[in-house]
Length: 80
Image 1 (cartoon, rainbow, N blue to C red):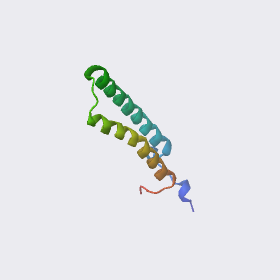
Image 2: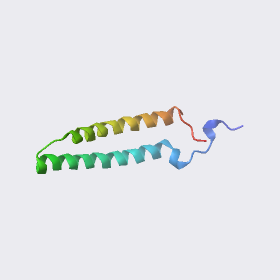
Image 3: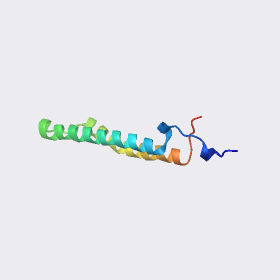
Image 4: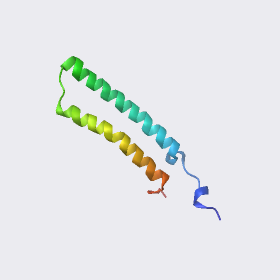
């Protein structure tokens, strides 16, 4: 009888794929926020309340990325 660890896991559900995808999108998000803040400081010479929320969401991204990886590692949510 096969153990649950020997079951086939689709490539989209493998931890390495998830880490790669979330890391790439986090890099794109960080670059976008950096460009936005550069434009706000250099061109517009101002910093608004919306920029604070953009920075907060940028900080929240890696936190959610780590939590997502922990759920896969400890098999908290399972797709069957």
